[in-house]
Amino acid sequence: MITVLLFAHLREQFGTRDLQIEENSITVADLRKQLEEKYEFLDTKSIMIAVNEEFADDEDVIQAGDTVALIPPVSGG
Amino acid sequence: MFEIIASPISAQEVTEQVMHRNAGAVVNFIGTVREITKGRKTLYLEYEAYVPMAKAKLEQIGREIAEKWPGAKSAIVHRVGRLEIGEAAVVIATSSPHRADAYEANRYAIERIKEMVPIWKKEHWEDGELWIGNQQGTISYENGKPEVNEG
Image 1 (cartoon, chains in turn brown, orange):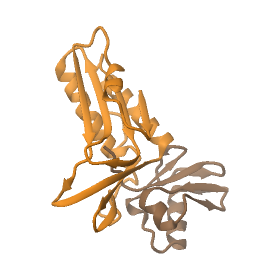
Image 2 (cartoon, each protein chain N blue to C red):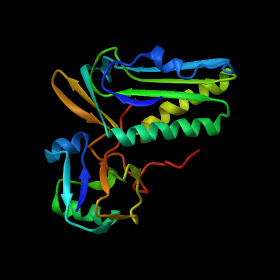
Image 3 (cartoon, chains in turn blue, purple):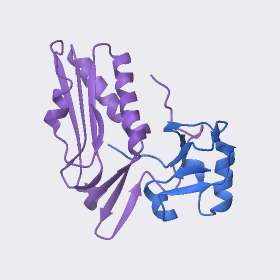
Image 4 (tube, rainbow over the protein chains, first blue to last red):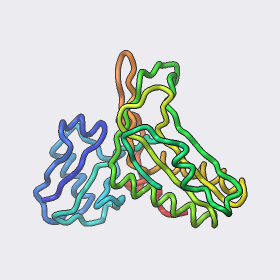
């Protein structure tokens, strides 16, 4: 099981702070694909993915127990 | 001091973190909530952060500054939650032996925050609200992430 955290407009769009993904091991690219197939309104092009609080590349592998976050373009400051 | 907090920021406290005997210059940046943006009147802002990652990224900015400007010290505090017009959303203090480095390092810190620290701002107007940053998909990251390489 992989937990995916949601923030800002994604949190509001999904109506929840996190999603549970039934996978033991998945690449970041496949996670993007899986999310876009399941949630048609979601376009992950402009979304960064963080794994265990660090920005991840598409080829990085997420393992069960990792904390994943969808990071839309930031607007702090 | 690199923190995400939900209460008003004390600029004085942040500044004191970077003051020391070899500092000949201290620069303080306060990012405040502006009332008018592109002709539209903001009522208040709401900030949200992925707190542990945001704190880690602020610490990373501090390390980058220490490497790029030897002798420079920095401290950054960003506030989350509801902020009223005029309130401080972020305070950045930098110090160095000479003023040029302190100014440059300070500017660097705010630009890095806007690039890659997971904090989001929601504008609330009289006739609507919007998470800025933005959901229209006009920003896309070629590598799936911003440039986060040090330096």
